[in-house]
Length: 223
Image 1 (cartoon, rainbow, N blue to C red):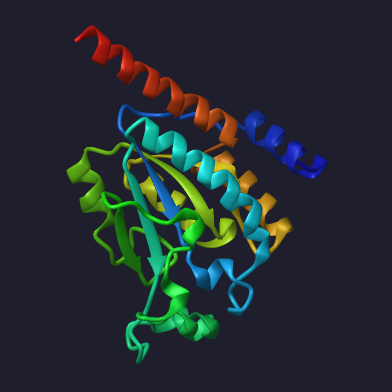
Image 2 (cartoon, rainbow, N blue to C red; image 1 turned 135 degrees about the vertical axis):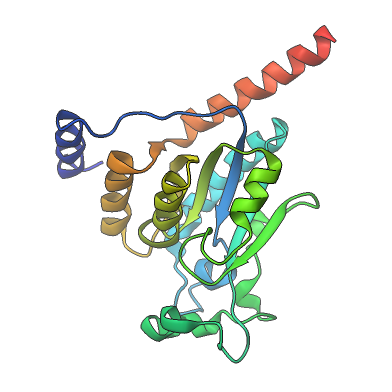
């Protein structure tokens, strides 16, 4: 973390910001937009800066599955005629590559979903807007969203903002999210940590998930 980021976080704390909301009782993992259109540089939206976050996301997912924590995937995909793209596609024309049925909307093999995982399709930055996400969370009894994926400055951030607004605890895994810009990645992690979400390292999150797994095993033995 840069000295500027550290200074900003210290300033936020001095102003009565950056309190910790922590984990609730029922978390889920949200894998945001780790689809080939974002992870493969052959697509204009893609970047290899996601390679390292994907490795970390694999570790988080493994710990979550061991703890039987639900996993939800969000991806961006539009109709072939882009009639559902709206101003988002008008502002970011390269989103037009992300058409249903194309390789660019498929989840990257490195973090591929399992049979029981939920996959939702979105057309906006937030996983909440125009999707069934909130209903799925409520049905599952989820109170905490642990986010990995991309991009830190876009869909990860907007989902964290909306999670806060809708009353869900939000944890962003700092080294399991990424962006096309390292500068924007760090700046947005700092801002989210100050206002909308708890930004934690994968080590902290995995430790929490392992503790849940150990707790489940202990309960099973006790039964």
